[in-house]
Image 1 (cartoon, one colour):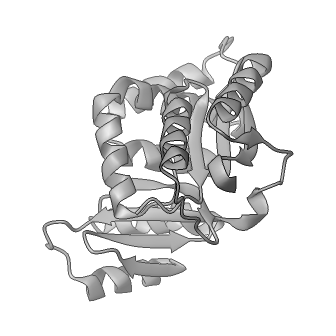
Image 2 (cartoon, rainbow, N blue to C red; image 1 turned 30 degrees about the horizontal axis):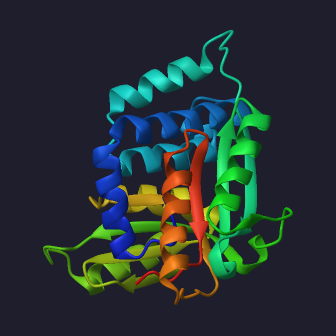
Length: 244
Protein backbone atom coordinates (compact mmCIF):
# COMPACT_ATOMS: atom_id res chain seq x y z
CA UNK A 1 0.00 0.00 0.00
CA UNK A 2 1.28 3.49 -0.81
CA UNK A 3 0.76 6.59 1.21
CA UNK A 4 -1.77 7.36 3.91
CA UNK A 5 -5.23 5.81 3.92
CA UNK A 6 -7.32 8.44 2.23
CA UNK A 7 -10.36 6.89 0.55
CA UNK A 8 -9.11 7.28 -3.01
CA UNK A 9 -5.92 5.45 -2.04
CA UNK A 10 -7.97 2.66 -0.47
CA UNK A 11 -9.98 2.30 -3.65
CA UNK A 12 -6.78 2.13 -5.66
CA UNK A 13 -5.33 -0.41 -3.25
CA UNK A 14 -8.45 -2.58 -3.39
CA UNK A 15 -8.29 -2.55 -7.18
CA UNK A 16 -4.63 -3.48 -7.16
CA UNK A 17 -5.29 -6.35 -4.77
CA UNK A 18 -8.13 -7.60 -6.96
CA UNK A 19 -5.84 -7.51 -10.01
CA UNK A 20 -2.84 -9.00 -8.21
CA UNK A 21 -4.49 -11.08 -5.51
CA UNK A 22 -1.82 -13.78 -5.59
CA UNK A 23 0.94 -11.19 -5.20
CA UNK A 24 -0.88 -9.45 -2.34
CA UNK A 25 -1.40 -12.73 -0.49
CA UNK A 26 2.24 -13.70 -1.04
CA UNK A 27 3.43 -10.49 0.60
CA UNK A 28 1.09 -10.92 3.55
CA UNK A 29 2.18 -14.56 3.90
CA UNK A 30 5.81 -13.47 4.04
CA UNK A 31 4.92 -10.95 6.74
CA UNK A 32 3.21 -13.68 8.76
CA UNK A 33 6.23 -15.97 8.50
CA UNK A 34 8.54 -13.23 9.80
CA UNK A 35 6.07 -12.37 12.59
CA UNK A 36 6.00 -16.01 13.74
CA UNK A 37 9.79 -16.37 13.65
CA UNK A 38 10.51 -13.06 15.39
CA UNK A 39 7.63 -13.38 17.86
CA UNK A 40 8.37 -17.01 18.68
CA UNK A 41 4.75 -18.13 18.44
CA UNK A 42 2.15 -18.99 15.80
CA UNK A 43 -0.60 -18.10 18.27
CA UNK A 44 -1.79 -14.50 17.74
CA UNK A 45 -2.91 -14.39 21.38
CA UNK A 46 0.76 -14.62 22.34
CA UNK A 47 2.23 -12.68 19.43
CA UNK A 48 0.93 -9.13 18.97
CA UNK A 49 2.80 -8.59 15.71
CA UNK A 50 1.25 -11.71 14.24
CA UNK A 51 -2.20 -10.64 15.44
CA UNK A 52 -1.76 -7.35 13.55
CA UNK A 53 -0.75 -9.16 10.36
CA UNK A 54 -3.75 -11.49 10.58
CA UNK A 55 -6.03 -8.47 10.94
CA UNK A 56 -4.41 -7.01 7.82
CA UNK A 57 -4.86 -10.34 5.98
CA UNK A 58 -8.55 -10.52 6.81
CA UNK A 59 -9.08 -6.93 5.65
CA UNK A 60 -7.48 -7.96 2.33
CA UNK A 61 -9.97 -10.87 2.10
CA UNK A 62 -7.32 -13.53 2.49
CA UNK A 63 -9.18 -16.82 3.10
CA UNK A 64 -8.91 -18.38 6.55
CA UNK A 65 -7.60 -21.62 5.00
CA UNK A 66 -4.72 -19.68 3.45
CA UNK A 67 -3.91 -18.04 6.78
CA UNK A 68 -3.97 -21.40 8.54
CA UNK A 69 -1.63 -22.98 5.97
CA UNK A 70 0.86 -20.13 6.25
CA UNK A 71 0.91 -20.37 10.05
CA UNK A 72 1.45 -24.13 9.89
CA UNK A 73 4.29 -23.63 7.43
CA UNK A 74 5.85 -20.86 9.49
CA UNK A 75 5.83 -22.91 12.68
CA UNK A 76 6.95 -26.14 11.00
CA UNK A 77 10.30 -27.58 11.96
CA UNK A 78 13.10 -26.92 9.53
CA UNK A 79 11.31 -24.25 7.52
CA UNK A 80 13.79 -23.06 4.91
CA UNK A 81 12.29 -19.59 4.51
CA UNK A 82 14.64 -17.03 5.96
CA UNK A 83 13.47 -13.45 5.47
CA UNK A 84 14.72 -10.31 7.17
CA UNK A 85 12.97 -6.96 7.49
CA UNK A 86 14.82 -3.99 6.03
CA UNK A 87 13.46 -0.44 5.79
CA UNK A 88 14.78 2.00 3.19
CA UNK A 89 14.26 5.76 3.29
CA UNK A 90 14.75 8.31 0.59
CA UNK A 91 13.35 11.07 -1.57
CA UNK A 92 11.23 10.96 -4.67
CA UNK A 93 10.99 13.76 -7.25
CA UNK A 94 11.16 17.26 -5.74
CA UNK A 95 12.02 15.84 -2.33
CA UNK A 96 8.87 13.79 -1.63
CA UNK A 97 9.59 11.71 1.48
CA UNK A 98 9.41 7.94 0.88
CA UNK A 99 9.70 4.99 3.27
CA UNK A 100 9.92 1.47 1.81
CA UNK A 101 9.44 -1.55 4.09
CA UNK A 102 10.85 -4.76 2.64
CA UNK A 103 11.21 -8.42 3.59
CA UNK A 104 13.93 -10.21 1.70
CA UNK A 105 16.06 -13.32 1.53
CA UNK A 106 18.76 -11.38 -0.37
CA UNK A 107 19.86 -8.08 1.13
CA UNK A 108 22.14 -7.31 -1.84
CA UNK A 109 19.41 -7.86 -4.44
CA UNK A 110 16.90 -5.70 -2.60
CA UNK A 111 19.36 -2.86 -1.94
CA UNK A 112 20.39 -2.80 -5.62
CA UNK A 113 16.76 -2.72 -6.75
CA UNK A 114 15.85 0.08 -4.36
CA UNK A 115 18.79 2.19 -5.48
CA UNK A 116 17.91 1.58 -9.14
CA UNK A 117 14.26 2.54 -8.73
CA UNK A 118 14.99 5.78 -6.88
CA UNK A 119 17.79 6.82 -9.25
CA UNK A 120 15.76 6.04 -12.39
CA UNK A 121 12.79 8.16 -11.43
CA UNK A 122 14.38 11.34 -10.13
CA UNK A 123 14.89 10.43 -6.49
CA UNK A 124 17.65 9.15 -4.27
CA UNK A 125 18.06 6.81 -1.31
CA UNK A 126 19.03 8.42 1.97
CA UNK A 127 20.44 7.32 5.29
CA UNK A 128 18.32 5.56 7.87
CA UNK A 129 16.18 8.13 9.69
CA UNK A 130 16.42 10.80 6.99
CA UNK A 131 12.63 11.01 6.51
CA UNK A 132 11.13 8.77 9.24
CA UNK A 133 11.16 11.71 11.67
CA UNK A 134 8.41 13.36 9.58
CA UNK A 135 6.04 10.38 9.93
CA UNK A 136 4.08 9.03 12.91
CA UNK A 137 3.48 5.31 13.41
CA UNK A 138 -0.27 4.77 13.82
CA UNK A 139 -2.75 1.95 13.66
CA UNK A 140 -5.21 2.77 10.89
CA UNK A 141 -8.56 1.04 10.39
CA UNK A 142 -10.79 1.89 7.42
CA UNK A 143 -14.50 1.03 7.49
CA UNK A 144 -16.39 1.31 4.19
CA UNK A 145 -19.52 3.46 4.33
CA UNK A 146 -20.04 4.05 0.62
CA UNK A 147 -23.65 2.86 0.92
CA UNK A 148 -24.17 5.09 4.00
CA UNK A 149 -25.54 2.16 5.99
CA UNK A 150 -23.61 3.08 9.15
CA UNK A 151 -24.38 5.95 11.50
CA UNK A 152 -21.36 8.17 12.08
CA UNK A 153 -22.14 8.89 15.74
CA UNK A 154 -22.52 5.19 16.54
CA UNK A 155 -19.29 4.17 14.79
CA UNK A 156 -17.39 7.00 16.48
CA UNK A 157 -18.77 6.03 19.89
CA UNK A 158 -17.86 2.38 19.39
CA UNK A 159 -14.37 3.28 18.13
CA UNK A 160 -13.56 5.61 21.00
CA UNK A 161 -15.00 3.20 23.56
CA UNK A 162 -12.74 0.50 22.09
CA UNK A 163 -9.72 2.70 22.78
CA UNK A 164 -9.22 4.49 19.47
CA UNK A 165 -7.12 7.65 19.48
CA UNK A 166 -9.06 9.48 16.78
CA UNK A 167 -11.97 9.12 14.36
CA UNK A 168 -12.78 10.90 11.11
CA UNK A 169 -15.47 10.75 8.46
CA UNK A 170 -13.77 10.73 5.05
CA UNK A 171 -17.02 10.81 3.11
CA UNK A 172 -17.26 7.28 1.75
CA UNK A 173 -15.44 5.70 4.65
CA UNK A 174 -14.62 6.12 8.32
CA UNK A 175 -10.97 6.29 9.36
CA UNK A 176 -10.05 5.17 12.87
CA UNK A 177 -6.55 5.75 14.23
CA UNK A 178 -4.94 4.12 17.23
CA UNK A 179 -1.58 3.96 18.89
CA UNK A 180 0.44 0.99 17.61
CA UNK A 181 0.08 -0.72 21.00
CA UNK A 182 -3.73 -0.39 20.98
CA UNK A 183 -4.22 -1.45 17.35
CA UNK A 184 -4.97 -5.13 18.01
CA UNK A 185 -7.35 -4.44 20.88
CA UNK A 186 -9.33 -1.83 18.96
CA UNK A 187 -9.50 -3.99 15.81
CA UNK A 188 -10.65 -7.05 17.75
CA UNK A 189 -13.24 -5.11 19.78
CA UNK A 190 -14.76 -3.56 16.65
CA UNK A 191 -14.71 -6.91 14.82
CA UNK A 192 -16.69 -8.47 17.67
CA UNK A 193 -19.24 -5.65 17.27
CA UNK A 194 -19.69 -6.69 13.62
CA UNK A 195 -17.54 -4.12 11.84
CA UNK A 196 -15.42 -5.18 8.87
CA UNK A 197 -12.43 -3.30 7.49
CA UNK A 198 -11.33 -2.56 3.93
CA UNK A 199 -7.86 -1.83 5.28
CA UNK A 200 -6.32 -2.49 8.68
CA UNK A 201 -2.67 -2.15 9.55
CA UNK A 202 -0.04 -0.15 11.37
CA UNK A 203 1.07 2.61 9.01
CA UNK A 204 3.61 5.39 8.79
CA UNK A 205 1.41 8.48 8.60
CA UNK A 206 3.02 11.66 7.25
CA UNK A 207 2.89 14.77 9.44
CA UNK A 208 2.50 16.93 6.34
CA UNK A 209 1.99 16.46 2.62
CA UNK A 210 3.76 17.77 -0.45
CA UNK A 211 2.25 18.73 -3.79
CA UNK A 212 4.03 18.13 -7.09
CA UNK A 213 3.53 20.87 -9.66
CA UNK A 214 5.56 19.65 -12.66
CA UNK A 215 3.98 17.02 -14.91
CA UNK A 216 7.35 15.25 -15.25
CA UNK A 217 7.67 14.97 -11.45
CA UNK A 218 4.12 13.58 -11.18
CA UNK A 219 4.81 10.95 -13.86
CA UNK A 220 8.11 9.96 -12.28
CA UNK A 221 6.52 9.67 -8.83
CA UNK A 222 3.76 7.46 -10.21
CA UNK A 223 6.33 5.26 -11.98
CA UNK A 224 8.48 5.01 -8.85
CA UNK A 225 5.50 3.90 -6.75
CA UNK A 226 4.43 1.39 -9.41
CA UNK A 227 7.91 -0.12 -9.55
CA UNK A 228 8.11 -0.38 -5.77
CA UNK A 229 4.64 -1.91 -5.46
CA UNK A 230 5.47 -4.50 -8.12
CA UNK A 231 8.71 -5.60 -6.42
CA UNK A 232 8.23 -8.91 -4.60
CA UNK A 233 10.51 -7.82 -1.74
CA UNK A 234 8.49 -4.67 -0.99
CA UNK A 235 5.83 -4.99 1.70
CA UNK A 236 4.69 -1.37 2.18
CA UNK A 237 5.47 2.02 0.72
CA UNK A 238 4.70 5.18 2.69
CA UNK A 239 5.08 8.69 1.26
CA UNK A 240 3.91 12.25 1.79
CA UNK A 241 2.90 13.04 -1.79
CA UNK A 242 -0.45 14.84 -1.84
CA UNK A 243 -1.92 13.32 -5.00
CA UNK A 244 -5.53 14.47 -4.53
